[in-house]
Length: 139
Image (cartoon, rainbow, N blue to C red; front, side, top):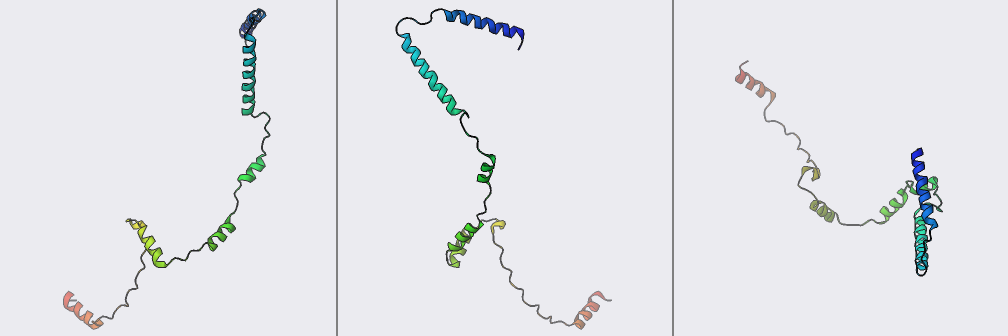
């Protein structure tokens, strides 16, 4: 702190002590008011303490980590999924899937490809092709 700031603080302190020496309270009702302000001050003090960390025990970082640590629920999920099987007819599931399809190509299921028929034999022989080549191209 600077010397000027300290000097100014001491001047204010001296001024407040000088005014504090003068009698503050009047005779009569002010005693009740002073008691009420003390109660309010205590209440606000208690509220401040309640909102602060004073008196609270800090939690262990390890305990917090273990509480939030990823747990494997695979076995419980597997048990649930295998026990809760619903037997719905395939036609019903097809209807539901068809209803939920969009119009975009990515929403459409891949259709099963039909097998191509076996290549049928040609009517023409190799000699016929050779004869046609000679007639058409001339070589």
